[in-house]
Length: 212
Image 1 (spheres, rainbow, N blue to C red):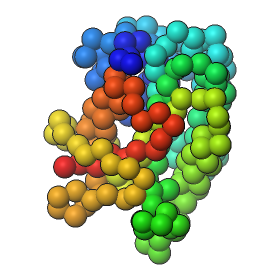
Image 2: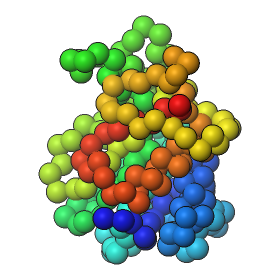
Image 3: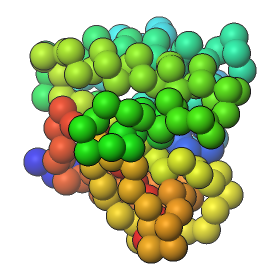
């Protein structure tokens, strides 16, 4: 299925704005879901807090992107809560929920028993963020009536990194680029997100994105 109509939740955020712009530039019909004034490139807007969004608000979209982000200790749990809320709104529909995920839950061994966030070098400050993303991913895996795709960026997710126009789409294991690094820019990640939205593939899967 090729997606034409897409809603981007938290489109005013850094990742959300780049994903929105990429979708608009490809000729898609884009609706921003924002709490206040729409500052993205989207042609339409739903002005609501993510937790006030209803199933009716999201009816008719081919894809809904969750680009919710939080960094403060008092708001980090909202990451998991937002993903689960949107998932419940879309349950039982054909709409794909495409999620800007985290890298901490990527596996570092073929047996899939160890993750990035369990490593000795993973910063303590990042563990609550990884836990919030991990909780949402676990919930998605257990949900039987939702089309979801969880997209993990590389470990070094560069907000102001360059747009190279290329990336590697990988699976659930930590993947390094040609120079042995786990890095990707927000701009290249946005390309991958819209590619996935248009392809309609990888339903009920977690994938990852790393620079070439």
